[in-house]
Length: 405
View 1 (cartoon, rainbow, N blue to C red):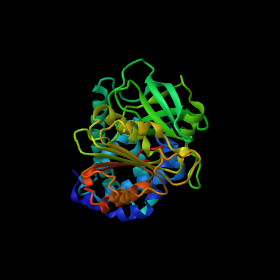
View 2 (view 1 turned 120 degrees about the vertical axis):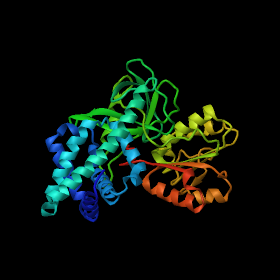
View 3 (view 1 turned 90 degrees about the vertical axis):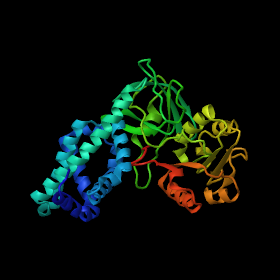
View 4 (view 1 turned 120 degrees about the horizontal axis):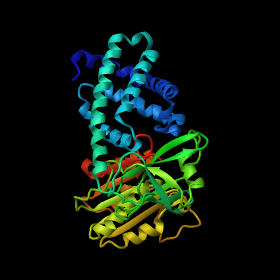
């Protein structure tokens, strides 16, 4: 337990971290990679280049400092971090390395303000946080290893099938190269995959949602090819998978993880609400519901830029038709030559409130949301405005701190 003085010293740095946190975390990552270059294989170098990783860590450190008196407030965040760490193969021994460079960075960035007492306080606080995460992560590792067909760390899988789902998305059906079993997972969870990136000269991991139902004897991921944007570089791993990984090739895969998944203990109606590549975990949920609960009311609501980038259209319409009370609703922002009335319900941005007004959404439903951050924020606000209880809204955002593509 931290004493009162330690808590006060750490809490007093929260405003400084909010203002200068990114400078601190940028310095920290540069320092750590210089002294421990082997850790480059664990961290997403695309997010390092864009600055997203530094921003995410700065926000996390500031939040921890602000809540040092009651870190339990952050437990949902810590649970998500622990799952992400396990998916990347982070182990107990890594925490000592990270702690050494984090404390050194605090001293080097804050200068005279980083008194010995402050450094000691942060060392104690970091030790407390590390112990919490190490315990949570070990429990996840143990559970993954004990599951039938389970494993920990990285396991080699072979690409059994590679299939185009749209202009931007390719599916990869993966089977264990050792011929072993695939563990059961919860629809909505993700796996990490790891491949060598030639231009870097080392391996890089990425997280991708599982896009197929469990119990099929294989894992399926569906990867959007991330093109370069104004502020973002092209996706190194997604482009490598699209361009260079072929059927028969092998990649490394970590066990399924994540706290976004279908609640199978409920019989409530289900609304699967997604945009873009956020459709991937929804396909796993839809396929599983189709196989196990065809009497449950299901709405599959999806938004895409246009029909050319729309993935799984025929597949999810066919699945929805197999429910006693199922319906799909699709909105495309732009017209496209591939549009058909059977596959697209409206042009323009998706408006959940309007769907509710038209009576298309069942009462007392559980809502599952996945997509870009802007889409997520809009839909969350709309659902709250409709009076949907917080415990009926389950959300996963792609990106740093969520599932990376």
